Image (cartoon, rainbow, N blue to C red; front, side):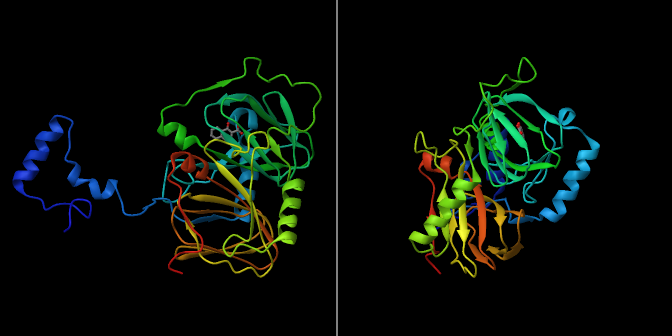
Length: 333
Ligand code: 1HN
C-alpha cells in the first residue's frame, strides 16, 4: 500500500483549509512533505561539472590585474556548482575555489571556523604559514589548515602561485557555527626556522612515490585504479575532520567500472589525460582541469595516459555520522 513516503496524499478543500490554519501557528503537516524529506536514495541538486584550466587560468590572471591579494583578503575564483547557483558551493557540503598569489604578494593572516585544504597547481616559491609553521608550496602538495589555525600565504618567486582551496564552509554555515578574525599583529610570527611543516603538509614527492609502490605491489582496483587515502600520520585519522582526501593513479588505458558513493567528490587532474563519465555526462580532462561528481551518481574513469587525480569529499564527516555508502563496482553493472 502506498503512503505519504511514496508521494503527496490527495489535496482536498478541507485539508487545504486545515493546512492554512496550521501555517498560522507555525506548524505544517509532515505527510505533505515527507516524500521530499526522506527519499529512497539521494537526490542531489549538485550536478556534474567540469572547469577547464585553460578557461580558468586566464580569468584568474585577469583577476590579478583587478584586485590585489591584500584588498581581496583572498584572491579566489569560486568554483560554483551550476545546480547550486549563488551559493558559493561546489557540492552541498563543500566550497572550492582557485586562488592566485602574484610575485611579491602576501595574503593577510586570519583564522576561521571552517577547515581548509590547499592542493597546489602552480608554484615555484609559494608558501603558506599555518599556526606559525611556514611550508613551501610545490605543485601537487596537499596542505591542510585545521579549524581556527592562523594562516597566511605568500609568493617569494617570479611566477604565479595558483592552488585549489576546498573548505567545509557550507557545513559550518549549516550549523551556524562560523567565526573569523584577523591576526592581531596583521601577520603572524613564525616559529623558529622556516622549513616544511610535516603536521600540515603532505608533499607530492612522497604521495606520488606511494602510488608507484602500490602499482608495483598489487593489482588496480576495477573502479579506482591505485587509490591512496591521505591519513594524518600522528592520529591515523583523515587529515581534516569533515573532508576526506585521496590521490589515485589510473594507469594508461585504464577503463574503470562504474561505481557510486554518497560523498559528492571534487577532482583535480594532477597528471595525464582521460575521461570520466558521471551519470549521463562524459567529461574529457587533462592536467589541472577540475570536475565534480554528485552523490550517488555512477562514476567511471578512463585514462589515455598514466593519469593522477587528487580528490576531496565529505566522506570523513559521513563516516563519523555512520551514513557513508559505496557501491564499487555498481551492484547492477
Ligand atoms: C580562506 O580563508 C582562504 O585562507 C581561501 O586561503 C578561501 C574561502 C572562503 C572563506 C575563507 C584562505 C576561502 C577562505
